Length: 617
Image (cartoon, rainbow, N blue to C red; front, side):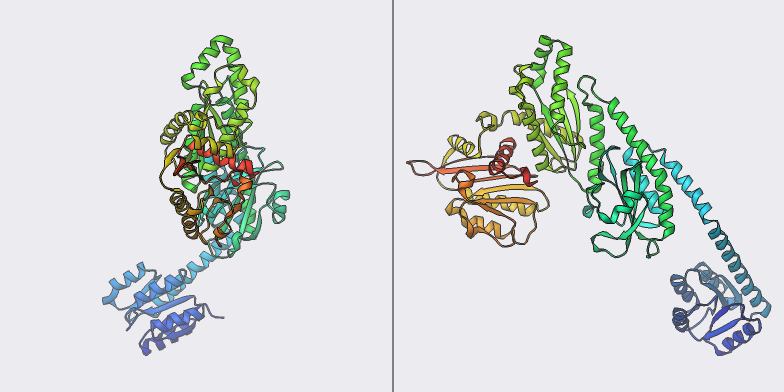
């Protein structure tokens, strides 16, 4: 049996035969080639323990050959043969990866010694690898122990999420990782909190339901162990799913993809992830408990709403998360009285304790309209802010409507504070459309509170009226015009939708006969363009149905009015227009406005009258 297999490369036949003879006598199996090109081709087909190559050769020389071999086979052992005058070049070849070099004319003993040292080092390396393999589990436990220890130093949930997905990716050799976990220990909803490596954030689910993952995840949910499944979205390869649990409750889920070696996850990665997840689950549960305690301690003692300091800190965290993951979030401002004047009078009338109790009832009413992930904070006496994670402008407007209705639904609540009800104002702002900094968002919200108090919605007493009645009242306040502009307005609104295809919106249009051509033109531009705006056309408009455009047509009888109108509400500017011929006169009467509160009310009242879910939800 030969000591090793050697490939000898030299353009001179004499040295090839010399090398072959010497090496065979030393007990090696030898093959020879006359050029670097032949050597590279031979290495593609077979495996050699050592390559012995001359330095000076026509075409690809020995130094370049070393670089090319190392690029393909980083572990390949290479010995350079060179003349004395080329020692400097040989040293450069060593830097490129050659293991050793010998000088021509070479001594048989020197050659044998060089090869034996290489093989001895290789044997030691293999023995070391074998010992490492034998002790891999022990070493893995130590490594996991060191990594797990660092987890418990992260008591803030968001930094912990980043550390968890980073460590899971390292120990499983994954190039991509995503992490979802619950906002509270008892929440069934898992929110996207962390991502690393080869991940397209915009394609990831914002949230998952722990009890709705599907039958393929049953072993993970019931047994609590990591599982390997085909990657989602019909991508090649497998994904390793790792559960984080608190008792029987699933509080987190990580998905790891793209193993470093380009292969697939094995039982070894699965076992390492399971051991790590045991400790990671404890760290996550502790962080969630601490956050719950912090939130409890940072509540206003009178109303149990969060303090404004905690609210601002949470909103800044939300800005960072939204910027990283390309998501929306919104804020709602609720102001029960300007400058707190009515509250001061109420406090003096009923006393501090009764006033605080009344504010507590108000907070309960607001909280009843919110979701478990929303955060309500007291800013001042009668002024409250709500943080709405993962919520766009339409979603924020829906919740704003619910809060207003909830606050005004109980007359007994307001009988305790006469004079406060008429000053109720609400406003919404959305990241990033209304600003990307906390200061900008809060300033915009304050301005919109003032605009809400001055809105035609309240000035014209439209709250509580049906959509057709609201249209008639607005026309009473309208302006006489000499020519129609409804078609141009609607075409402009359709271009807004075309410009904002990924943003959710609402567009309701009842076109005049002479405006249909421009409406048709605008709809044609949306053909086969996926948008998130709900488009409803009112009237006998079968000729306006545009194939490839998501839209709904309803008869005017169902809308309750045959007046031409257009209402648009979404992330961008809000707008409403109604028009009609003036009875017994020439010309038109038209009302239009970009007042956000008015447009929002008209859009939702229209949907409510038709029996449609608010916001198309």
